[in-house]
Image (cartoon, rainbow, N blue to C red; front, top):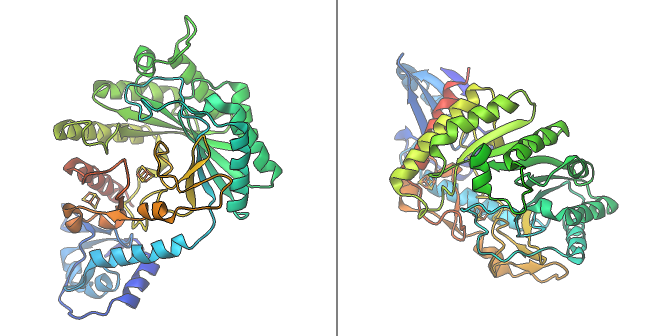
Length: 435
Ligand code: SF4
Ligand code: SF4
């Protein structure tokens, strides 16, 4: 038997401390991914512990002690789904009692200079953060980060439309002695050398996420920017600006949107991006089915087709030596919480200074506090700790890695076969590549 990955010793300890075996009829844990190889061996990956082994069918019998000590085999009456729920519940209580907030989504504006047809901000009135709110934002961060390093995500709308606000917050944070770095979700169109220098030097920007749906005229049509000077190609400008960000030492994560509108063009878009930037350090791509969690956006067949295209796009990037951005190409692992919303260290701040638990949706009344006020609406906070799961989750091997929240706007229905198939495909591919 070959141990490909050691399991997480803390999880094994939790299991030993909290579970007393009542029966010893050992059976495989429900959270295993098992890949049968042609030579009578199999790779077994444990999503709960992160452990992986490669062994023959004989060894599966002879290594019973190792396999049960390390949670590949469990007593017949062990309820692993309840075990995961208990750990998450305990962690939620512990996490909520922490008072440090050192991760922030900041919305300098909800307005944008592009008009993508699929934008989630469509129909939302553009709002802009005032200088007064910017200064209050910096004070809030200084007070609540309790001298821990801070991470900021400039979000929107298009945050680069409000450079003075972003600079004001950053300068105030420097003045207050706060150590911070930042990321930005931007279309990149407005950037130039001076803006990028300010972003790097003053706003401590280290990563930008730039969405791409097409190249050349396709890009220009989909983005439909306002106020484009005659004879200027927005696509050419984006390509130039990606180069400028990279030159400045800022990592560029391209979000390659895949949808019905561009599905035939994905290989061509990748050829263009890879051809231009593959030798640049810090250039990354993550192919992503657009609005994949919104169920009325596609039929089940359409979604399945787009996920197949997404797989091919991953392979194309990996074969070209491009890193898949944002850790999207990684083994599924035990997760104690869902996202920013049920992590007490994160909040979102809207242009008018409202503070949200779900930092990705600040266009509602679910804010739990406001800048300048010490009042907190605990009921609204509670809403974002409430988990949800569906019937199919109760027999799903990915359960330890997958947490869904009742209030999440991004996922309101159980996943489809293509979601699970994509997870399994990635898992198998990564495991097979372990030497
Ligand atoms: S949402 Fe899907 S992948 Fe996640 S646990 Fe439920 S069935 Fe599995
Ligand atoms: S939209 Fe959903 S996944 Fe995203 S932060 Fe909000 S609750 Fe979490």
